[in-house]
Length: 628
Image (cartoon, rainbow, N blue to C red; front, side, top):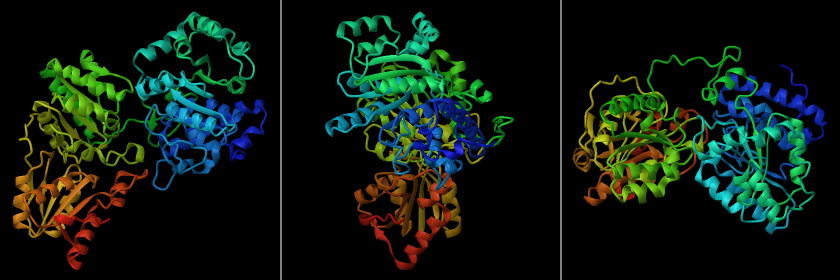
């Protein structure tokens, strides 16, 4: 397709010289460009299609980058990247060396605040607005948040603060009734009530007059008038919080969006504009199945995304099958997710056991303490959560679960490197932040069968337990129908060798096997990070001269550190190499590329060992080596 107008837009200033009559054509070309490009490279799809007109209107109405637009999560930002000078690079998105999957400060001055996790935009916008006011600068601040993001406690905390201060902030609520899964919760019900209300029907009929009576340039309604408006208007909740509410309006009417935004620029103080959009807009398969088309692989846009026929099973599917199996035997099982039904493998469970399936929305903190409450009543709650999302509930993990030694199992998906989603979703810190918490049992499976048995072991354990497993496919190991309950803290020997012993933690076992075979090394699958098998470590130190620990976690405070602590505690002197993720953030690439870059590959590990042996460049455990 020829992009007659879009090809001339290399920055928002190019967009702003166009007539408003051209904007519909810009939106249509942008949408078709996104469909054509993402179908060839893959990536986040539905949200960006739904935000096309809003993105065009924002950059047309505001003087970016002087005015600051802060996006929430960033799933919807592909159009934003195109309009801000990155059109020619969009096909590289989520690939090593290519565009970041989300807005990134290091990539563009138009990406004013880096994002990836939800519900941060309003808080950041308030901070920017307060600083702008303090410095007496003339610039506008806009936060764009979806209705899914608005379900999180952090967003409510920010709105609570925003309504109590007189800062000039515009929050745009991009309401498409979706996050990744369909939204849940009282806020979702409230927004739905707005859309079905008589007030909205009236507004819809006369939407062109929505701002007809808006006071000019900074004038406000009296307190009494505000209160009356709050009682009558659809956005009563926001009005009562001290935030002027406007809308709902059609998020696919570019001209009216521009008119509305330019009018709102004249009004100072805290404001919220409610915009209604459709996720996947303009591509029928994505409109019909917004969950499937949230993020897509490469696909033929004439056919759509086809079913993945790959025969290897994913770790998420292993968990899905195990959960349904165990729930059929134990009516105490509850599965809890913070808005990640599909990602965490809960679709089947939610259909088979709807009364024991709990989606709390994007509320990770609440999900953990909710599980604690269930455990107090003798139930068996399982919190199904990504490694990087569990970070958001750290206080609840310590204070509400571990401190009370409650029986909660955490199924931690996306542990280790996650590939194309990059640094914001990189699960390489969980062993470090979990290992220091008392009462925790932490397991990391090396294959599909190990994952299934560890979940069973964690389920039987009376207390907090974590099973952390990687994103994507397993090794092709067949699983048995029966479960095995592992002895807590017991490792397993894989093979015996000479001089060198490799202690492997988790899904990098195949890499370790290759190294052990090439170097005639002993290999132990440690299984448990906490409690660690100190007896196996001591025994291995007695018959080997070099110990190598390997993990897909931060080297600082991770499993290797746990091994070092055992050796120090028992005054054992042995040469040690800790292989893990160095102290830096890793950008988007394939998981294999990220592992290799961090030194976790057969070639890189062998090179470290050979270099150290050749040059005697080893330290004993008192000076453990972290050689990149």
